[in-house]
Amino acid sequence: MSTSGIMIMIVLLLCLELIERPELAATSTERPPLQIAEQVAQLQGEIELLEQRIAVTTELMQSASQMTASERTEQVQHLQTANNLMSIELEQLRGKLKQQEAQNAGIERQERKRLQEQIESARRNQAAVANAIQAEIQDDRPLFSLPRGDHREGWIVDISATRIQVAPIGKTTKPLTFVSARKGLFQSKRAADAFLTWIKSAPGNSKSYYFLFVRPDGVSDFEQISKSLNITSVSYGYDIADSKQKLLHPERGAGE
Image (tube, rainbow, N blue to C red):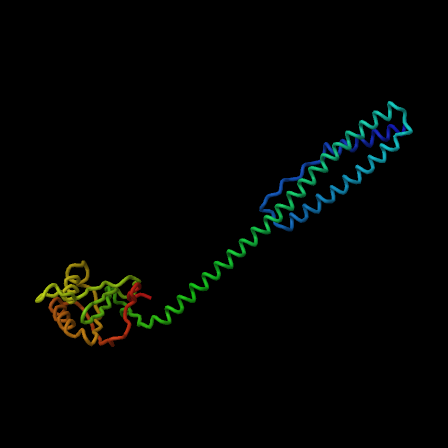
């Protein structure tokens, strides 16, 4: 009877431990790889412990031959119940172990992908910077600014024989372009006329300051423009520009 009581006590303790065992907290896919490794090690330890208990239960079942038939039958039923419970929990732990290993592999793949994207982004940024540096090296043109304290709007005017380009000083904007064109055999449209019409029509233009750069072939247009500006009292200055000198950027104008 003492042996039977000990066996029943062992079975009850095992059942109580199985009932009161807390469920493993579900791990997020965002958990760091170090915590996942610790969780996997813990699950493996519990699996080994359960396997040891199953072996002990098997030994107890084999030692039940010294009991009576009814005691042995009852004891075997209790042990089989405990064994089934532990087997179920063992399979659950093995499933969670596989899940943890799969999650760990998924996190490693995501981390590799994230690093590769960062590397590609850095390469693209490096190439963009290199292109910008090369463009700045090739963009050999002067930068202009009005004297300190002068709050008027300033304009750079590039005058040549066939076209006149205008861009505001210190602003990144595409230049305005006025082009000379022939309408007929005896009629032609001059860029200087279109430029002077623009100054008169746009609000605030008459109060702005214009710095005229004259190309060698734009002298005649400069004379017409300067006479008109003198009559209307529009402020301007002028200088001579070489035929190959770059003054305005095709997209940024007179801006940086």
